[in-house]
Amino acid sequence: MKTVAGGIATALAVMLGMAAPAAAQYPVKPIRLIVSSGAGGGLDFVARQVAVPMSETLGQQVVVDNRAGASGSIAAELASQAAPDGYTLMFLSASLVVYGIVNKTRYDLERDFTPVSQVAAAPYMLAVTPALPVKSVKDLVAHAKANPEKLNYASTGNASLAHLATELFAHITGTRLTHIPYKGVGAAVPDLFSGRLHLAFLSMGSLYGHVRAGRLKALAVASKERVKMAPDLPTMIEAGVPGYVVTQWHGMLAPKGTPRPVIERLHQDVVKAVKKQEVASRLALDGTDAIASTPKQFGDFLKAERKQWERVAKVANVRAN
Image (cartoon, rainbow, N blue to C red; front, top):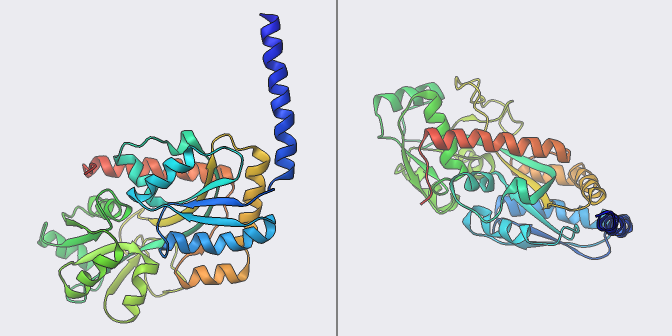
């Protein structure tokens, strides 16, 4: 037994000895950043804003690899199977956490990944069709209570963040709304213009341009504080919906087992990237705030997000298709 134990200890020592120099030399080749959405969307935009300056500071190219499908689940499954060496990373959004609550997956975000950093967040906005006779969240709640299940709301799919965010609003306010799922924001917004849809909770970046153009009415933002882009717009909490904070956040994960020195190096380079004035400015134009949380902070945040949306899915009886 002593011989076996000694052999195991020796093997571990050798493995650790090999891992330390490898981590110290990291990176020595290009890094693949798997993005859990298609090209051109909000998540892809943020990923590319960060990938360029990270390539400069790491001294190796960070290659964006878009893998859309199943709210990011296809990308997550692929990334979870990658070698934990720091050369394959995943860029995800809140949508992937929500998807995993309702749907069975072959991976687990907590079991199979190590957090690197939350990178950015865009608050959700509550917007309504101009034809709806309301001017505030209070008006909307009163109108919805007087017309139960007659107000239609858009989401970007069953069990999406937009779906659960609106069900959270309905639960807190005691209203009953009718869910109409769409395949994406681009398909839903025209029906908000026309009045077929009455309201939507979606990211500020996807809605605020239409608000400024007069095609939609904004009632509130779902951030803790008012946003610089629209300082006159109240938060949902100010508007009378206690505790209502919803953001479409973006973050970076690495496969579980990635050496700690590599995680720390990646985190340092994320911080450098989002602190660049040009990066923060470009994100702000899209209604997105740059964030650079520590790996532990991001891990704690992921757990809190999962718990919140698990409760909402249970209360609203949201199930997989």
